[in-house]
Image (cartoon, rainbow, N blue to C red; front, side, top):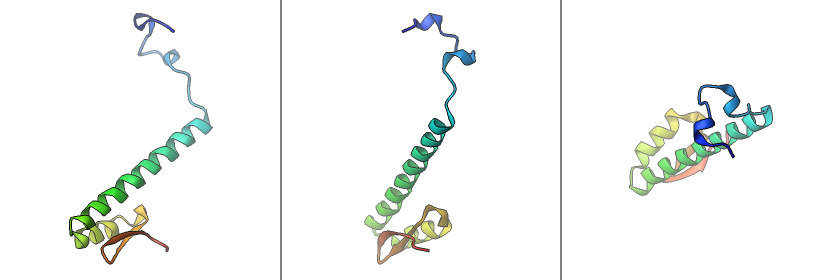
Length: 78
């Protein structure tokens, strides 16, 4: 392990570049994290009794892949 003082933060040699497979994995993880976050937001709105607001948000963000049915968050099956 190198000492902190020996690392140049401005050089590209500080960290090896990611392979295409590693970049794809990071992309997928980020998408999964965003999906979970979006689901939690919609579920919390429903839990608070704000089903109409959750439905409006889900409809405005169709690409999230969720819909609100009877006050519950469900995956959109389109």
